[in-house]
Image 1 (cartoon, rainbow over the protein chains, first blue to last red):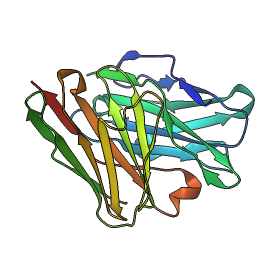
Image 2 (image 1 turned 30 degrees about the vertical axis):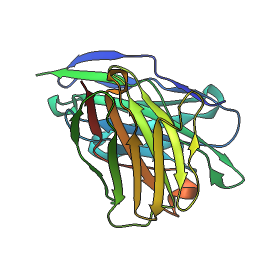
Image 3 (image 1 turned 30 degrees about the horizontal axis):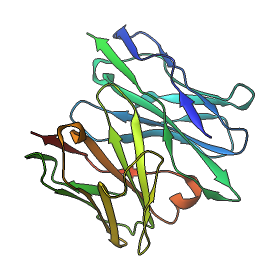
Image 4 (image 1 turned 60 degrees about the vertical axis):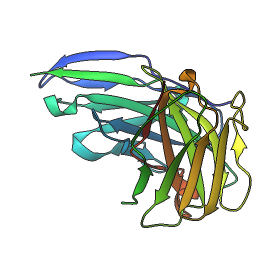
Length: 116
Length: 118
């Protein structure tokens, strides 16, 4: 069965610091990978996704993530965080069977607090 | 982008009553809708998957008689929490995908509904 693990449950950074949030998944086949963000009081929004092609994907608000197949990882990065990046970040994975996709499984989430 | 709307956003009910939460895709036809439950400081737990016009598929450990899901049209799915108890208090989130995201797997999320059972 698919599973997703996020190593950091709670991260506190100062503004302008660099961010890297880890995400590993367990599934040996073809996967689609996502990072979603949930700002305080708001619904989940897609930050970025990997479907195929270039393993380094760029998303909104300066975020990027790199898919490393050999490591089953899809870490999220941002070179310089802002106070407005304070939110909860979820990594999600679904497996692709014969072109169609299965359900989306989420990691436990990482709560990022950026101090001004 | 595709918009998914949930209603109500907050609901408080007495123990033993039933509560219905609606999930609508506003600008696309949702071939599949998913219902998640989010516990405090925990991840989103998939409860069930529903396809329009067919019975929902429930995840292991989710009581289908407790959490009734109806997907009557391509734009509406409902979750009814029957005979709610305090332990059912949670944040319920629906999500939907259209025919393009049947391939990509991307989901569009509703705002969530916070249920509090007294």
